[in-house]
Image (tube, rainbow, N blue to C red):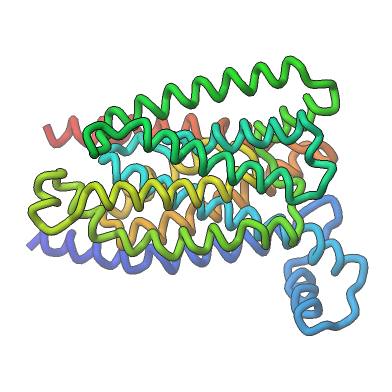
Amino acid sequence: MTATLERSSVRRGHRLALPLLAAAFVVSCLLALAIGAYAIGVSDAIAALWRSITGQPLTVADSVIVDIRAPRVALAVIVGASLATAGVVMQGIFANPLAEPGLVGVSSGAAVAAVVAIVLGLTAIGFWVLPLAAMIGGLLVTAGVYVMARVGGRTEVVTLILTGVAVNAFAGALIGLLMSVSDDAELRSITFWTLGSLSAATWSTVLLVLPLAVVGLFLAPRLARSLDLLALGENTAAHLGVDVEWLRKVAIVLTALLTAAAVAVAGIIGFIGLVVPHAIRLVLGPGHRLLLPASALAGSTLLVLADLVARTVVAPREIPLGVLTALIGSPVFFLLLRREHRRRGAWA
């Protein structure tokens, strides 16, 4: 009787998870629109967005909302959802809660391409050069890691991970080499970009990465059942009709798309793709049908709030977003690991 009541309570909690996360997401976005150096009420922020949509004349306060804060919030939503979803897929495909999107080299590849664009002065061509270079670099390096990891027509998980680690180390060395030959202006740009930031957010950058993010976020839930079966083991999943090699290819492509889109416009932002999926899994369980949308909402909410703190806590200066997420994510992840250790110890 007690076990039945507990299972019923868990199911009710799962049904409430998405509405609660959606409510937290909406609240975080409204706060991010209203709070800043120029104080604006939440109702005024909503009214400004409505006037913009309906083509009414905009005040100065409206312009702050529509042209500065709204694209930044939109970009935080896209980046947070993309990184968290990519993290869920990576953890599912590797059957390891410690896996994260940068494991296959997409973040380091994007970083190298972006740094090359900065050092060569290509950013003077247009705003789109840096994010486009980062996206191309991330996708190309991920493809290279996958090809190098194939042995006998198959991709072994251990080989893929080790190849990714080696490529990430090599990319880090290249970035260090390029920084050593950069002038002061380039060095500041490289440093700020590699530490992560949404300060360059505009509607143009939002539209530039939105297609990649939408494709990845739309396709990822379609892998939910296969990822659930893969958690039972490769052999079991194969017996149940899952083409494991095909699943791994699709998962890596989706991870590359989502992570490249995020890194291209925000730089390297750590721990979102690692901590958020792990935390949501501990609360809601391992089922990917719920885990994927819940992680996307949680990732968006967390990054919107983190960016709000980054641009307000030491205003008019701004804390690099990647630094802030690492400062928050590291202790949170440690606490989650401790909790998981105690829970398993209790079962033992």
